[in-house]
Image (tube, rainbow, N blue to C red; front, side, top):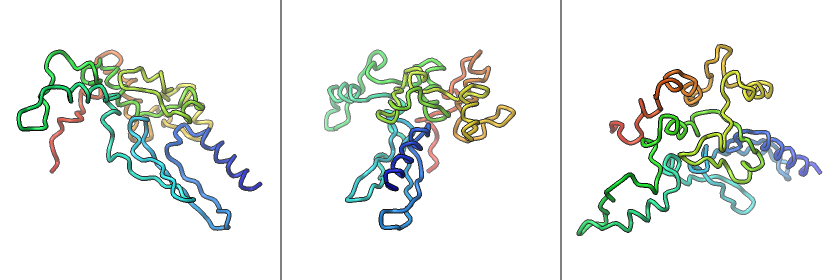
Length: 217
């Protein structure tokens, strides 16, 4: 009975957690030993940096990809890989010649999106959000894909929004009373409310570069 209650409590906790990709559980095993389980996964379905591995009676996580995957920012890449694999090859090399012509339609390039679309790609991780359908999220993860509107998968928690009031009631506030975000790594929340973004056309890429940053080595 105690085991059934514990399992039900864990299910309730996961269902209430807007981001169950990270968590810690403490309790006693059936042998009476204290057990602590900690896990952390990727923020989105396209950057699932760790996966669960089941071995005998244990469940652990292991690295599935070191860093953020290409598809987290560029979307599904299968068609892109096929397109370039079928292009002509450089003589004596396995490197393919770049496909010339118009922009590659088989991949999303955030630099080609407008300032709102480009910033949403970053906002899928650098924000605080709730899923509009928690049951679907628990079963399938977030359905956002680069180029989509974030509202297809996220309810972004902005200052003074009903969502933030709800999080305050749950004891999980995101903002200080002056409206400043109190958690690091959530820059999108302030960015999309700034006049530089709402009136101007500033995007995250106006200041940040993912591929052209100078090497620190």
